[in-house]
Image 1 (cartoon, one colour):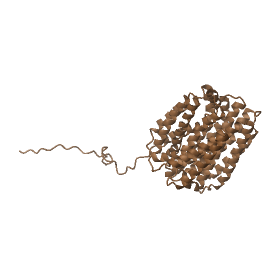
Image 2: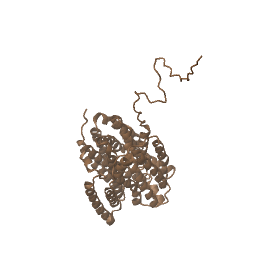
Image 3: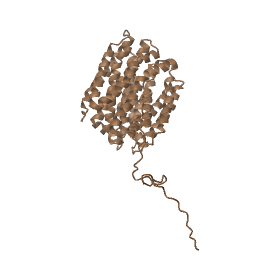
Image 4: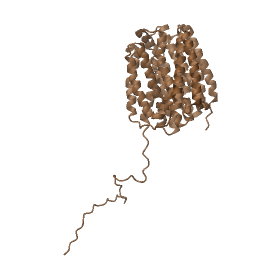
Length: 474
């Protein structure tokens, strides 16, 4: 009898109750499987908002602490102006290139580098033994902030593919920065009184580390070809530095600096017109939305930063308030600012950027003119409340313009456009502090009305320019 040997055969997959053969988990995905879902936008948005709030907080948190800095380090008004402007000037000047840098190396990498450098520089500011070391650390902070800012806005744009959600996210991103700027005097006064002026820098350390932690959950950004314009950047830095020096120092040296600024800016325009990849593509200004957004942003910065700077000194040096009391004078405008930013985003969605831009600037001008009534005899409550309309007008007008500008430029120009807008804003703020600080040396009887009227005149002009914005097409 012959036997037949049969090799064991592995049993096949058992049919499912529906009669289908289940897919082997180790095998290829089913044909119906689509591309992997995009990463959640939360970490990128959170890091971007926190980073933007951190660097904008530092443009105003120092203002109320300036008298304490001057008393501790033995410096006068000129030194105090440089404590503010050594940060904002470097910040503004380098923004022209760091927008292209964010496009070139990727927004996430640029943001991480800037956040780490900003955190370390903040520690150096808090540990500074004298004015020169403080100014040097502040300048490094400005470098880091310039790297972070356009990268943060590019991160928001990358995180949201839908234009509607992106516009709302940009408005909230701008709101975070605006609230941080408004919160700066309150936080600066509280930290200076409870600790010392060094606390306004040490508070950046946990916030910077938190932003870096959120960034670890964000995918690496794509890199784009974006050549750097070194001659354009150098002439811009020279021109802005010389102009600020002239405004702060004055005298014969100031006149020489003013001449250098004029030559540098002329060279800048000549270089930019001939460069294939300019640091500031002058063609961007042919877009009406971009041109209006940049000019409105500059006027708003003059009004807001200049007013906070002058009134922060007025409350302490003229009225004799403590740093904490001076900071609390800005509390009403801070509390209301977050809500008006959200409201402006809703108004922009319904009416476009033109209506909130016009309405916001009109309210800001009216608020500034009301501040002309403030003097030493005005009640503290009235002084605090009279600051509210100006800040609300600025907060209402700017976020829709930023969102509209980002939609008006191509995606590959997002970092460059963000850098340009914020470079102009920070430059305007630095010049306002330089000019208004020089007015303070002549007494608050001159400084208050002059700074208010300058701000109101600029906002009136940019309000008229906002009439050129396109109407919303439904």
